[in-house]
Structures are given as structure tokens and as C-alpha cells.
Image (cartoon, rainbow, N blue to C red; front, top):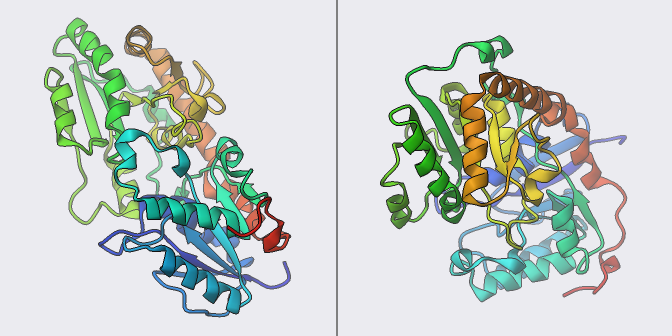
Length: 363
């Protein structure tokens, strides 16, 4: 590239006007990384009013008061400025599970359908998600998730070999407030493992529970809910808090195997690797391609016996915990930080076909 490409990001935000965590991870942190400073001239914000840029990246559903009319006006502004519209999406909104569909109005689905059809380019996080949308638009780029190393408090590998706390082993889970059904998968196995190791285990949950009624599933477990201090919830500060303060022995990543979850990314592998903890992951598409069983994590079938066996394996084998923690940590820092794979994001701005090149034309 001879001169920086001008890019404006319309990140998805909530009623507090702050970018969602996914917007930071997939767009704001990578595209403003110093590694790309000479190639990209990036601005971002809540609005776009026709400024002269080469690309406008629209993230997911953009704003809490989104409407199809507002989206059509935005698209018109992008066209008048002769910019290209890139649509960033990381979920299969056409296959929402029952517990998520109530938050999605028909108009929101119409917006996703419209943008999928007319965008000059679409960014997704997995090959499986590309396959979900390829029949609607042929200009799709897969950019796997990566963590911004600038936000992570490094864990010294030699610390991983220290003896684990002999009084209590901490089993942890971290996630957004949409994973109630996923967490329920592991409850029976956790109950059984805690009965075997009475007073030897503590379970910590960061986020994860969006419905208060889900808490009843943990009534028989030694659970502690852990949250950052007020003001540390926004993603950049949260990641510094999380990687600096979290001290677990085992981490859990259960995921229901359904059509909505199959295209999801392996972000929990990265999050758990960042704190140097061995993880147990559901044996589903999101993790099978990147988690090496018994090397960078354990893969478990989604039934009680399998989760119990995986938990007992890591609890009883300290050397295995240490080796997995080290391998996962090395995998993250050698392959899945923005510093190591910043070039992936430049693929967004390569040669584009015309807007009419998608299979079905404008929607």
C-alpha cells in the first residue's frame, strides 16, 4: 500500500454509548494496533456523516436504536462518499436459539439480511460462519480472533510450575451474560466432583449468568461470583484486571452443540491461555480445530461422565495441568496475538469486486 487506507469504524455499542467487548476484540484493538499504523488511517465513533474515507466498517447491529430506515440512510451516505461498506458479524443470526430469539425483533433480522446481501465485503471470525453466509454474498473474509498483547498482564512461565494451593483448587469460568445454557451443561459433573473432593474445591464465575434464575443451579456448589471494580467493565480495563487478578487452577468452556454455536470462535481458548490455566472445552466445532487434546487443553463430550472424567484428570495430574498451561500460553503468544497476526486485518482492504458481485445482488 502506497498511502494509508482511510477507514472509519462504526462499532456496536449499548445505551451507555461504550463499544461492546466484541467490537474491541474484532475491530478497534486490531485496526488501531501500532503494527498497522503505516498502512491504515483509522477513525471510529458512533456516527458516519459522509466523511471522505475508503472504507466504512459497520459492526453487527451498530446501535441500540437501530432501524432499517437508519441503516438505509447510512448505506446511502457511504455510496455518496464513494466508500466501500464492510459488514463485520460474528454470529449466525439466522439460527438464533430460543433463549436468544426473544431479544431479536423481526426488524433486526431484516437489517442483518439486508446488510449481508449489499455489503461490499463481510468479515467473519470462523470458516464455519463464512459457510453460513456465503450463499448470500461471495465477498467474505475470515479473520480469526486474536488478543491484544498490550492489554495482557504477562504470566511468567516459571510461575506455572509452583505447587498449586493444597487447601483449595479453583475451577473457573468467564464469559458474557448469554451463556446460562452452556454453564448448565457442567453443573452435574461439578456437583459430583465436589462431593468427591469435599472442601477442596472452589468454583469462580466471572460474568456468564444473565438470568438470575440460573443461580439456583449452583445452590449445591461452592460458587463465588467474581466481578471487576466499577469502571473496569469496559473491555481494555477488564482484560488488564482479568489477566492480572485471576488465579485459577482449571478453566471451563462448555458450549451447547447447536446450529447457532457451531460457527462460534475459540475466544475462550485465548482468554484462558492468557492467564496460564489449563482449560476443558466442549468437543464442538468452535474448539476442535484449535484445541489440541491433552496438549493445549482437554476436549470433552457434552455429557456428565465425560466432563467428570476431564475434571478428575486435571485435578489428579499436576504435571498435566502445568504442561497444558505452558503449551496454551505459548500457543497464544506465538500465534494468536495481534502483534503476531496483524497482517490478517489488511486482507479486509484488498481487491474488491463490485457491490453487485454477490450471488443474489442487492437485497
